[in-house]
Amino acid sequence: MAEKDIDGFFTTARVAAREEAVELPGGDYRDFLLDHDDPKLTEVRGLSYDEFTEDRYQAPFLQELLAYWRSLYDEPFVGITSDGVVREGLYELSEMVDVDPEPLRAAERLLKTLSDAERAAVGHPVTANEWRAWSNPEFVVHRVGLRLEDLPAEKIDAVMDLVKASLSPEGYERVTEAMALNGFLGELVDLPKVMNEHSYWFSLFGAPGLEAPWGWQLFGHHVAVNFVSVGGRHIIAPVFLGAEPALSEDHPPLFGDREQIALQLAGSFTPGQHAKAVVFESVLDPKMPEGRLHPADERHVAGAFRDNRVVPYEGIPVAEFTQEQRDLLRQVVADFLLLLNERQRALTLAEYDAHLEDTWFSWYGATDGSQPFYLRIQSPVILAELDHHAGVWLTNRLPARFHVHTTLRHPNGNDYGRALITRWGGQR
Image (cartoon, rainbow, N blue to C red; front, side, top):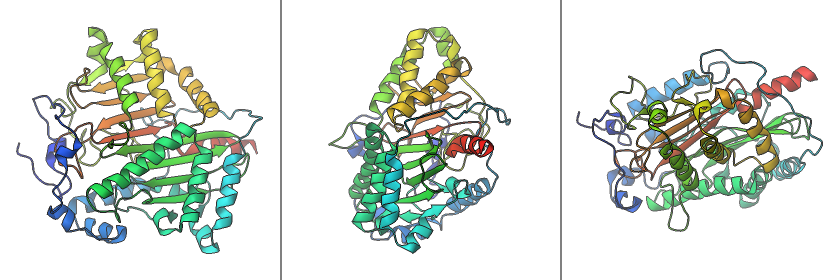
């Protein structure tokens, strides 16, 4: 089937079944840069992010997508499940004596820098539906909170100080690197008003305190981080991190280590394990059922607005892994949880360990690194994905490792810390 443009930014090639393998392209991302005078760029060059959004909203495909996303957003929150039924009793509050005061202090400093109008715009109740308004495109879907690029430098610094105080050092580095890569992309295509390192929305939820539930949200192109603190326990989910290109001349690939460990794991499979784990031989396998691929999400099942999706387990049960394979998989999971500080990461990994016998791993594509791939790790308490995408601002029509999306969820109702917030309310 000949590929067709969907709306100028997407083509059917990214979701069209192919009998032949989807090989990784040679060269690097610069071989796929749009010409500076390409109409795709010149027609929007100089527009503000609001003007760019208005222009994008004219596309019929996007209008349909926005209407669908709105219908999902309007649903009452349930949580991602494997069968449509939320499993209870999976998330417990931990007794923690050494509650970290730094996020609270940073939040208080931020609030002092804001005007009354800004405090009103940035703040929401801790269970507000605005948590679920995040999205990852470069155009605006929901205007929630404050837009960083509209703030003076000292207020941006105060926001980022709170983000830094809430995350691990290495997690903060990864988030800010993704933000910087967004700015790098804006420079590559000369659209700095649309994509820059501060083209993100920020909100606070609840009243910051040491124990009572509160949190913050940062989201925009290729970055969405939801941080919640409940009784001293930190939850950072949903998380969406990605990049196009996923590297620059000054920095290694954003998820390079994660990809290499995952490939080492997939390459270790016995023929029997391979037959179960590799659900599809290609990221565009014609055996995929209708609707499995989406022009915006491609293979992702847990992206923006998919808070209530039913995602059946697929692939291979981790119970069938060797200890060495389990150790490799745990390294991948730990990298997905990198944003949590060391103590909090250990608590969340302990929850993952407790459900190891009910954890599944699936893979799409070749396992030798010769093709783009998709992976999913799924258990009652974690759903994590990594997917290689086709170009949006680069010209590669087929998925490649230049464009990477990752998601992290806590199924069965603990996205946005909701299950723990409910438990907190029940104990008070």
